[in-house]
Image 1: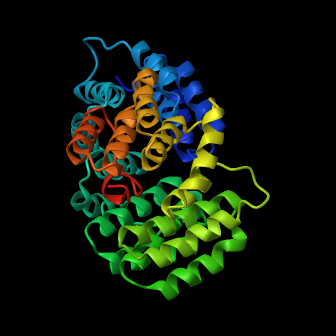
Image 2: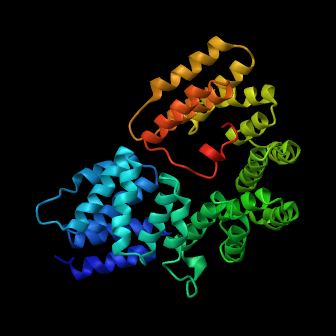
Image 3: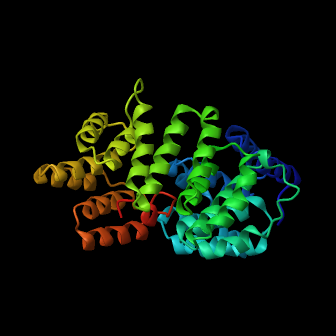
Length: 367
């Protein structure tokens, strides 16, 4: 049964305003009000709250979508996709989004979602280019196309994982002249560093420095330093960590400052920063702070305090964490050279639904 035409119009308008969160949600709500049986609109609303990290609200909305015997196979697949998202079953998430992708390959939102899940949920960089090439970008107005940026970003990260650094650069560089978002600079930074193109890296950062917020500037320099650590160029890494540290002369410390000290092996200052953050129990990166404090205490031979802190992470377990705590515990064990335990907790993290990003797992200097 097709949706009512008014509901379909609202959904179409919503998709074209994806980058405007408030308007997107308003239009989805109007689509649902116009046709209370419109499953696609309800599923997109669930996805909206999921992407915002409001998992309990999203799951509540998901559970309110009651399947019945009249729904189609495609609708049932979308419901299965939603269920897998909230249970951390990344293999099922990928198989169900591929079912939808086969039906709607040139739908930007579906195509973009398939790419994100394929690379970051199941680590299949070899699948990305085929999905990316299904949609021609020639006539796209890129600065008004949020999903276009996502697609270029994911495809570049996939090329980097495949060690095709020149292709990542040639595909992405022209796009960064049209889309200013800082997240698109990260794959460029990685490709420049891993292909030993230091001059281009410095030129890129010099060019964009004045266009970035202080927070974005710090984040990109921390990212560059981390990338140099991955190829064991310590001096180059430290030069970027120094930029981060100097940026906090008149700013409140946060975990990025703590990580700059940590990566520089300035453990005394790292301890000061993470202790201060730990005292702020509402800090949004609390798992990270606790794990780093535990590592720092172990480095300082205060093993009992380290073990106490890392054990405290178990008390913070809750639903919809998708392996984040196990990942932090794995970092702790890797740093103190408990390799078998580190690998065990990494596996647990993946089994609980954690994802691969440009700074986790194989891209994390700790591992």
